[in-house]
Amino acid sequence: MKLGRRNFLKLAGATAAGVAATACSAAPPAQAPSSAPGTSLPPSTGITTPPGPPDWVALRNKVSLLLPGDSGYDSAKRVFNPAFDGLKPAAIANCAKPEEVQAAVSAAARRVPIAARSGGHSYAGYSVPDGGLMIDLGGMSSVDVQGEQVVIGAGAKLKDVYATLGRAGRCLPAGSCPSVGIAGLTLGGGIGVLARKYGLTCDHLVSARVVTADGEIRTVSADSEPELFWALRGGGGGNFGVVTSFTFRTDPAPSAVSVFSLRFPAGSANDVVADWQRWLPEAPPELWANVVLSGGSTVGARISGCYVGDSASLAKLLDKIGGTRTVKQLDYLGAMKYFSGSENRQSFVASSRILEVPVEPAKLTSVLNGRQGMDLLIDGLGGAVADVAPDATAFWHRKAIGSVQIYGQADVNNRSVATDSVAEVVAGLGLGGGYVNYIDPALPDWMTAYYGGNVTRLKQVAKTYDPDKVFGFAQAVTPD
Image (tube, rainbow, N blue to C red; front, side, top):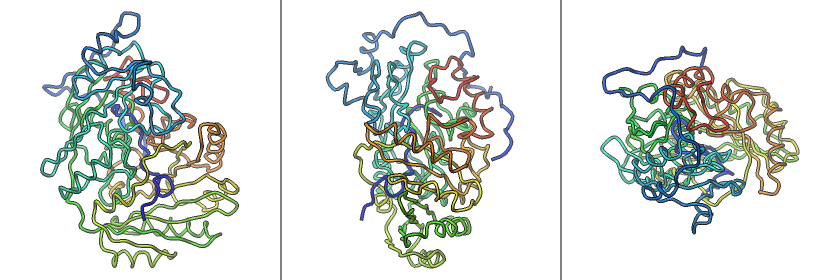
């Protein structure tokens, strides 16, 4: 049985933008950008632009451009959540190569807001810049396996990434929703069902090509523009520049991935949460699992997940947690398809918190009492995610037990009601932190919540690469 995207995992809601880096301990000192030979940096201040809107006519000679009123404009601006259908970009640039992104950025910089769209799953609709330029990266969707590495265009969707890697016998840990873009997922970190075994998506990034605010095309890696490379790995979608392609290292695809679902009796939610918090951190990294808590007159609970290995080995681990189980042993591609669901557009409101340490189960379950259509999804971390230091990449929440997504079903007409309900649940949880790929405009102290002790360093990267806030938006990392 294929399970619905939101009703099962709801964990691959990466920020939609393909914009580079725009969705733990004391703050590290800010580090100066590399001055290694061959590294060119943009000017830090003093860029001026004549007043007036971009010259769309001139840009149309360089890029396929849609303006309001053009045939196809209304459908082209749509993203996954219909709640943002009312937003109206001044123009949509459909880019098929880095030079076209370069032309688009140069034409619009410091004149109108700029945002890139990869999969269009931004929880806040940030990839639809109202009155600004949307850079649609869908024309750059190639997935090219090159031995142990894969080069992926920023417009590629996860369904195509998995299909190509699966045929080549290679594995890249990523999210679950088939229409999520690789760009937003990676730039926010990339939590997925294989994270405990293989790490986050961003942990596999080798290099990226980026169009920065000064209109330059840069190749960034650990050896070239290392500070920007650091920021791209978990610094969130929407900041610093537009990524046009990613090069990842891959692992051999596992021959067996066993998927499972555990059901529990009504009224047992507190016990399920308590058992999960004990069970998963003690399990081998091959095991990943989440808890889904569903609101209502009685709070429901189920555990779902996967194990990199055969079903017989998984059974021994499941014996320690109980529940009525359903198990299937699949290959890598089959497992990724199992976790995918419908690509139909859905209206919802969501936010997140981070589960740093085990908490009293009632703290998580009680907020859902009487809240039909409201879910909490606790996605497991640990394993390979925790093997990386919190300041080694921009993704801060390395030592957490899991991320907690608060998800409310909605339609366009009752979105305000759903927004209020999600806000009430978030406040009631009393947890801190947040996952930038579940970006929330209402999240208090959002910069610290997303980036923790990495904020100072991220601001320094913004000061170096985008001092004039060319890629600024409501929750952008900026120099000040």
